[in-house]
Amino acid sequence: MRVHFTPEVVRLEKSHRELKWEIPVNSSGNKRIMNPGRAGLVVLSALLLLLGVSSLSCTTQLVAPSQQLKIVTTSNIAADWMGRVGGDRVDVFAVLPVGTDPHTFQPGAGDVARVAEADLIFTVGLGLEGAWLRRLLENAAADSGRVVALGEFVDPLAGEEEEEEQHEHGPFDPHFWWDPLRVKEAVNEVARRLAEADATGAETYSRNAASYQQELDRLHTRIMEGTSQIPLERRKLVTSHETMNYFAQRYGFEAVGAVFPGISTEREPSPAELAELVRQVRELGVPAIFTETIVSDRLARAIASETGVEIVRLYSDSLGPPGSGADTFIAMMDTNVEAIVQALK
Ligand SMILES: [Zn+2]
Image (cartoon, rainbow, N blue to C red; front, side, top):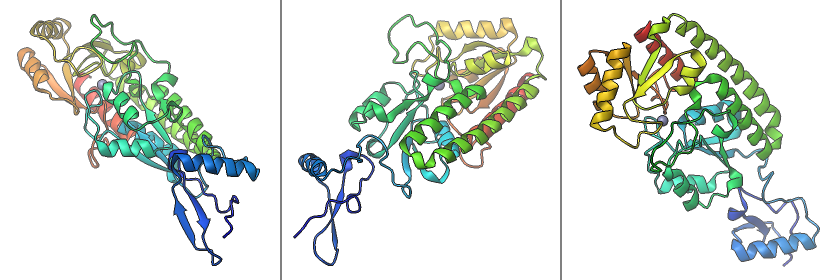
């Protein structure tokens, strides 16, 4: 029996960890799918070398034109961006189900499998995902070349000063999607990385990204128009956790304080911190407290009843379910801004 190692019968799928090749085992051309494992890989590499097949790289260009790129994101908001840039060429899976808190999430075995199979893994980074992300990437043996932390490409704002080294997040605030102009930067990076992994789709990615960026520009204009109705003295934000610093900076608001101290939701406030927030809400005449769909509003309700201010719910770190008016990033922002303007104008 002759074994033909020609490019026609060598088929690379996904990554070299799951390298498979098809070998015609008899003259009628029946094929057997083999998974070579580590030892087999060495043998295959040696054979390919002998045969002068040098164009097969294990790090890039593994995607046949007919095959979708397998993309995993942590944030379901980022998953929406992937779908917009990648279109039919990508298969996107978000680790965080709609309505879950990225700071405290615990992934399951299915998530590990998805990450292990992914061509590219997009995180928000900047500490948004907490310790669970590091464990997930380790468990899935995800090499750093497949992992893109989008927050690193958006000129991130500094986070709050931590007195104790008790949090996993770094010195930056991860909630950059509250600024559509920074999302445009993230979208650039998405298009660049997709094109790198799938050169055939490069033009599509670039075109899709440009068209989505125009929508983001229009969103930015709508937010400016909407928030212009809010008097300066009422542009004060109290939120469940510090999620709106980017919005505050871009559109001229003051992020007065948060029920959960800091840019994570990991730590509940102390009685003294709650009392201080109540004092600020009263003294500064804060018109509303914005709670979030991802965390309990129990403490926010306590502050609201203490101070008599209104409670308004926003979509912060997750999209909403279908039909919520927040099931895409742009719809989510429009819904949030409408709620903010109604509460503060
Ligand atoms: Zn958050």
